Amino acid sequence: MKNQNMKKSKRLGASRAAAERMDRIHQLIKAKKFPNCPRVAREFEVAKRTIKRDIEFMKDRFQLPIGFDTGKNGYYYTQPVDHFPELPLSEADAFALFVASKAIEQYRGKPFQRLLETAFRRLTGRLDEGVKYSMGSLDGVVSFHPFAPGDADLETFELLTGAIRERQAVKFLYRNRGQLNAQKRHVHPLHVAYVDNHWCMFGFDVVRKDTRTFVLSRLSTPTLTGEKFPVTKKFDLEEYLRGSLGVYKGQDDHEVVVEFDIAGADDIRGRDWHSSQKLEPLPEGRLRVTLRLNSLEEAEKWVLGFGTHASVVGPKELRERLAATGGEIARRYAPVEG
Image (tube, rainbow, N blue to C red; front, top):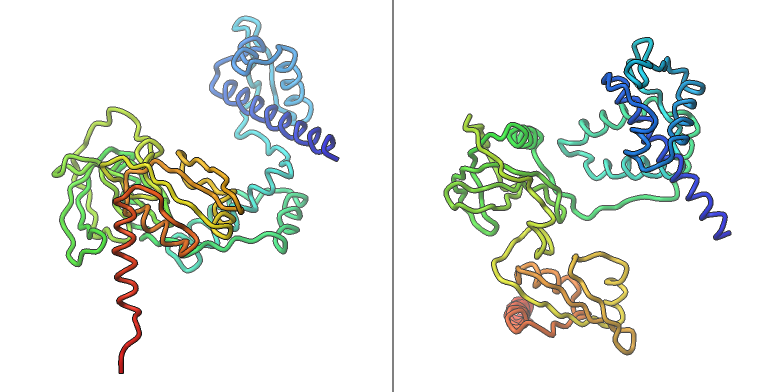
């Protein structure tokens, strides 16, 4: 059974690779680059005969009008070709589309719902019946239940993403977490991402002269300034959040060590909490987790989520924060006399 699955996986991988090569050949021909077998073979690091077979497949199965220009030593279309024919989807592709369709459900009743559903229908409208049947057969077997997905105003989202593309500064009112009053911000927007169940915009704050994170649900009345700003290098979200468990970015570096009992260990295993995580099995099914983080606020929130199943070994500052929080919780829920 294992060998059959491995062979099937290899076949699916080979078909996807061939699809990528043929799409690339189509793009080169359509752009009048006159590709030939040696050139494309070097690009994909395959044999020339493999590219030859791809082109023959395109001519025979897809009926594409491909000719060869001896003077320019490359292939061209003898007639206009508007688009590349739809390729048959594998079972893995059908599953990926199914996951995408379920991901849209978390926006039911939100501003993004109609936009996402329209785009998905456009993408899947021309799928053959076999693929649609495969997706339908999964519907009663697999489902997704996201916890408290974040909301965002569609107009704000579109304005900010447009400003990022055009490299145009924006001004808006922003309310920091836990604050009542909003402050005016002047920002060079760099990136929008969905992190820790929140839509966030990452941008350079002109006044504070630092890159900051702005949660869209606390951002209001954004306007374009007309001011263009240069971008020296592409914004790297993974690098920016390297020391974060979510969206908060601290200034210090902490080695956070937490031990979990057997129940907590079951909640930890099999999940990618952070790129720095190290898991160390302990006796009686317990587990020690070590993380390299720069925000103790996020670490505190994370540990509290496990209740009594987690115990912080270090750092000392995190233990003190939790002790203070635990004391406040005990005070609030202490029995009322009388």
